[in-house]
Length: 257
Image (cartoon, rainbow, N blue to C red):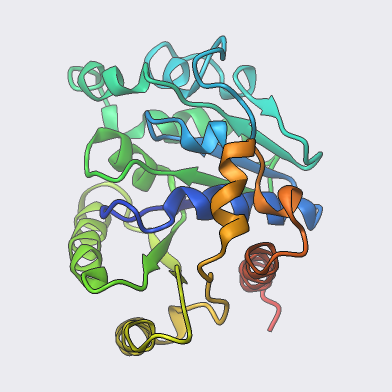
């Protein structure tokens, strides 16, 4: 039975999609059957693998609104163990179209259910807002992985996210857990990064991954080439960090210490 992990933070610009693309790619490289579902209408996780969101014939929108089987929209990436369920701008309308539907918060869970045995890891890239798309993701997820950037207002967005998680647990998904917290855009030379790290460690304790994602030029360049950083420059510090994070995630999920 595969594990469904939502990658979410209501605050934008925290490295959420960067983490979704590069973590799923790195776990695929570790030869774990992996699926990445792009639930963000901007389609950045889709284009991060060189897939043009405007040219896909069908997307996750069709699964949510037209009950199309999820397996019918999946696209193969350059990594043999990784497939992507693409998104495009159609998904913007899904927020409104879902409103009158029965069990509207569980559409993604229904779509994922037939495939849970086929994939060891199913990652879902959430939009940076609290709407029906994010609620669908949190209702479908076993756990949530939270990227937090090393910036001054980092904890402000996290407080709102934790309140959301509590609400989801009470009303939609009582089994939802925090998978882990990853610090992004980390620069060990700055006092600010050190201060944010200390605050996050104080708040989340053992939930914080040992791997910090650094600020890295290659990591920033990779999306413009439609590649995860591990395919763009495997020797970069960004690629190394995401491989290390992938190993941490897998070891935790498989009970390896």
